[in-house]
Image: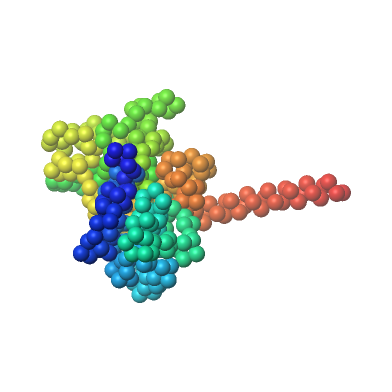
Length: 373
């Protein structure tokens, strides 16, 4: 707010009645500036996310060779056709483009910001919403990753963990350098799986992000993990969530790393849980690199990424009969449909469920026949 005036109001960026040498460009730039301030200052969205949306709006303006008060739904349809047919952009990317244009149009068409009146005074016309439900993709699911993504089955998961542990043993037995980073990586992969984390969430952990759980005293101070760098929504701040510890073997591995290995890697005062050889916080790409190296050595499917460990966590819990709502909260999904998409149920589990369904159906048939005899 500026003297009671909301962020983004046209009067903050244009003086009514003042002429410009290039009025269309001046007004367009003022609109973009106002929208950015409304998004960053008013809605508190991340500047880099807002700037990406601004770039999309600029691309649309460049494509049409028109200014926003001249745009039509037909212009937008043609742009979408180009992006889909010639550039083959993914559905999630297309939706991002559509969302940016839709929100920008909502802003400049709103009665609260004065851009309609400004355009009428200067150009004799006004902007309209060009992105509607009938010319944009419906948002069916939160997750829209590639169809090739899948979880690791239990055998693949065990192979991965065994390979990571073997690397530590080989380096120690040969008295070679790299045993500490290898131990860190083996533990990190286990933690990503055992708490259902994204790589970015895992590398963002600090040693202070663990708490006791009165309902699970056997885990000591590692009963609850506080995830502070969860995936944000449309430019918002990172989402926080508490993840309850489930696997005792993972807690034991983490505790051993924190107490025996991490102190040997600390080179300066830092609270980061996972440290590089330089003593700095580990990065997501380093997790991906180590995962890919082990994956390729084992001859596993190259479609697998560290995110497959998160998929595996969801799948294996569901297969074990854990309440889907609990699983949804553990991984921080807003929609149950997203958790369902993450689940890749195995054939053995499906056969078990089929057998139970057949038995329940048979029992109902028996009861029905008994009641009519």
